[in-house]
Image (cartoon, rainbow, N blue to C red; front, side, top):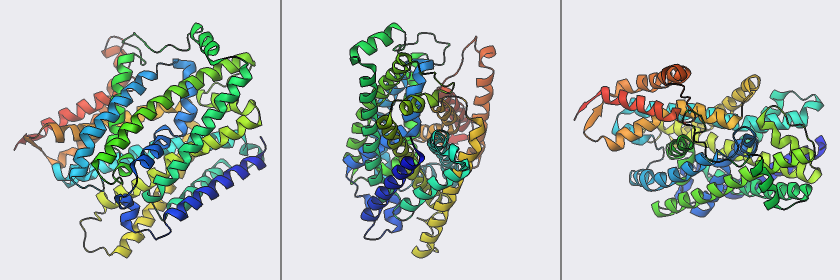
Length: 483
């Protein structure tokens, strides 16, 4: 695929995003519109657009490649995700709407105190900044290795160009723009996935049934891992999926900010329920795509790369021009849909939780707007630093890396919200919370590192999040007293 064609595709896609952004924010964009979308977003648009954010470039790239090393055991996580979405819809969303929150971490300030709110917001910012930057990193990495490396363009320059493009269409409208650009990006990603599946199926020259029968015989369709010591043990995957969704969606300002733009609680719950069903269906299709990729590679004698994340790109780009174009469109759409909303959410959380926009009367609307724009540029710059710095460390399937990082950073958040909602008769010492938020991930890391020696051969997978949350919950209990 020529560099000229790729550049034209990227530029055309960017112009389309700019057009959507301009149309949505044509009547001006206040701070309220940037932070909450004026709470007028149609729930169906929010739900559909959220699929692109939830899947992101990592799911687009990593899940199909993940099949080679873990077969279809990832489905256990997906089933857990579905249960987690329902918990978010019917437990957390009523709380957020009842309190009329702009930042969900305002709940922690109301329940525990200002230091806890700050700690919760900083945990989110660290978690989401790293996670979303790594999702976008994968897009930049694939574009660079497959096309732009041969031109002599530096890796950092490509990363900078892509982030500047994101900055341009999110700078003014914030979440109000992101809701609608995500609809476009989800559509492009799903159409690209469907087109690639058709191309692969045609290239195999067989039916889906026969292809999956051969895959089953080769052991690629295994879902249930019964070894309790394994990182892919089904029930560990299920529990991890539930907790990952509660934390990475229900306790995540990026995802909840989009939900809180809906007109009312009922529409927001409809949004989450519809998202849950779509999310499961699309992940099942991605796992099926992974099986098709491996079957296609075997049938056409394609040598697979060592990195799982590179399997999809290697096969798609070698399957012809149509497949290459579809892959590039889907990849860019998936990467952009994850990054744009995160930058807006990080800006919102910092402005509301750290700078205290809602409580400070000394800040005029003009000064708030200026500070908001500065923070928007700052977080975009942080993305660039992470994307450039992570490249030498990229070795494993990135989806696994992101979930492990989330296990350490989101664990204290899960403990804080659980303690706040379940333990009503105790008051936590607000000053102790930042220390607990740091010590519980450190203790979890040490236990994880020596788990085989300490726990009779047991190895932690994504459920390290549960251990981290339990340790933080215990810390909150120790540093609390009866009201």
